[in-house]
Length: 553
Image 1 (tube, rainbow, N blue to C red):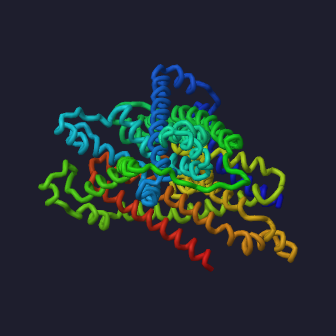
Image 2 (cartoon, rainbow, N blue to C red; image 1 turned 135 degrees about the horizontal axis):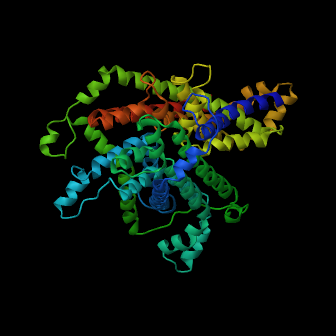
Image 3 (cartoon, rainbow, N blue to C red; image 1 turned 30 degrees about the vertical axis):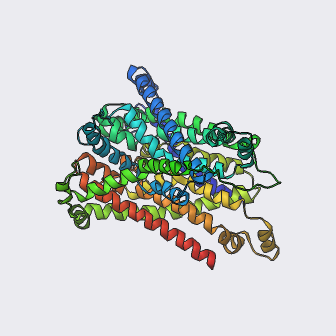
């Protein structure tokens, strides 16, 4: 057991600590990437001696705070309508609310640019025709709006779970006392789910702070500098590339993210004083809105249109047009499948889809196997060093994709093992960054399985591995498949880490989508995005079917 824990610890340390240490080394080295050098603080002095750095930090915090606030408002309203009210269509709304998880954030950002482009954006064209001023998406408010909608599904999952777990008798008491449903929601429901709101807000603040998808599409053309665009500028577009300065900014971003993620974990760990469900039981009960239920349904439809329907529809339309333009009857007659035909004949697209699918399947499998081992050691044993394993799994939570990529560049360029500039460095990056997602799925499932069955197996003479394989793992298959599905869909669309690590021979779908966009090939980009979304849906459906089949067996 100790040997297994030590082996898992070494793997986790290599995945989490090695790129962190090399990122820090890159920020204090006086030599360029791949060359031995001496330690110096010159890069930190250069970074923080530049007044533009503080403007960049301010932009980053404004962007993250605004996006988190919008995501909370949208997700909170949608969760309240679907979970706590009798609005018609709630089951469908809940299903549609999680659909954006299979749509790459990069595609959502490009879709909103097509909708809100100052000159040809569909919404702005309609606004001008009715006498309203256009909305410029290439601005800080535009960035905040788009990122807030992208983050809303994550906040929805957290808030809706809290609402389902809340005892409705408190709301019923408020209504008996004469409170209107909206007043009860404001004065009773909202305070009781405050931990979930704070957790969702803080988590989305961190995710927005480290986001590169929306800034790459909106901030760079708008000349708005945030942390991630600054790292990309120094590492990818500067001539010559300054990987030392990129590491300096990435290290600063990592430090901020780690502090915020630590606060998030502390916040979610201290929720006992908000418990409303006890041993006496409770009965979920929907709030009866009367004639207002149809207004609530209309509100949910509007929110879902902003989150998923409008972006997906504009992408689908763009993929069917010879070139993007405002839809008219003339453009409808020009609908074509030529962009999809291009996908079938392009070797570059075929290679990218093949690489991304391989990374999704292999990476999700390896990630869940490692997550299962870590969860088993930390939850089912009392082996020494469990706390260290939990600490090592905490680090990837805070790793922004850009920071991890720069750390891996510094770490693997000098290793004798031929990993740098191959698809394997992408696999390592994906598993490292998103391991906590799989670990959470396995841990939450494992704590629900009692230890009696394992004890009976060991009494009968079975060893630890045999017990895990024949007794424990079959009970954990639903959690394993849930985590596998999450990782596979994320790996299929990953962009921010891949952009720094890929080569022309190892280009996955994410960077290819980005380059099609910046090259002005919007139709091809949209067609590929639709295909990627469908592949993600197939992965999810296949995993769910496999899980149901295994449960039936």
